[in-house]
Length: 283
Ligand code: DHB
Ligand code: FE
View: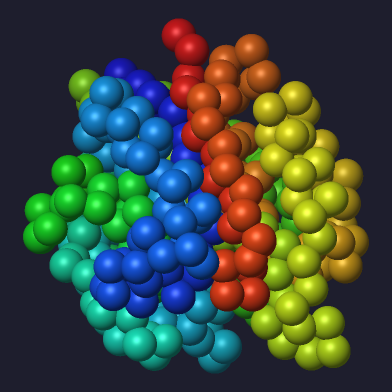
């Protein structure tokens, strides 16, 4: 059976793509952010996952407001990146893992998650930039096959934190029941607090972010007490992307099954409080 080696949760901000393309990693503005990643890259070199399940949110590249699935899972042989604006160079396509995709889809539907299956799927900065941050030397050959899992955080109504936690638990169970000798890492991207629009544009809530990060270590279901409206109030209209962190952390299991290896938090990257955490699964 497949093994979950651990999970990584990180923010995704389009400006990171421009910084990577411009080689700005050592600039004073960017250094505290990029300095968070070498320990994660080293850990990935050690645990050598074969597949990454990437839980992210599309921002209008693959889904637009006319058709907006709540949960969707990729089932494509490869996932292309495409120009989504922001001036980010597009990255080489990502290989899929059809066997895990269909296993995951079947397991999730069996567990009463009504998902959209995507046999074609463009992936945006929320998928591509974390991949590039984790495997900066990958070039055209990504070292992992990928399965994108997309959660709607763009058009209300959004799935609740509680629902996303349950989705994560179901993803964890599905991956562990996959009949393959494969090592799987779960990645969650988005957040932490940020608001790009409206009167509160630029809103950041460090106190809540740090409490949330701590909860992923000590009490991963803590945030599920909050409604979407509560979470938007606490984290901003785009801070709600912490839903992906909740799902990714839930997939890894209980407090006893998981050890936190590394974390970083830096304000701001563009308009966003940038967080990073790495969890290893203990056998
Ligand atoms: C920014 C953050 C995001 O999560 C995003 O998807 C787009 C932009 C920002 O802070 O600029
Ligand atoms: Fe985003």
